[in-house]
Image (cartoon, rainbow, N blue to C red; front, side, top):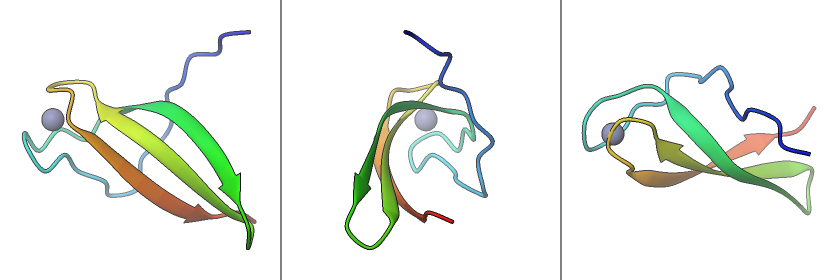
Length: 55
Ligand SMILES: [Zn+2]
């Protein structure tokens, strides 16, 4: 099942082009209830990883 992976960002900004829109490539849950998300800039393709605390 492919769901459109678009989410609200939270002040995240591409280091390369300053774009604020990212695709989420994958989400992975790790110990401690954290979510690691791999994101890719929609504009220039710059990739970055963010860590979120799961509620
Ligand atoms: Zn970018």
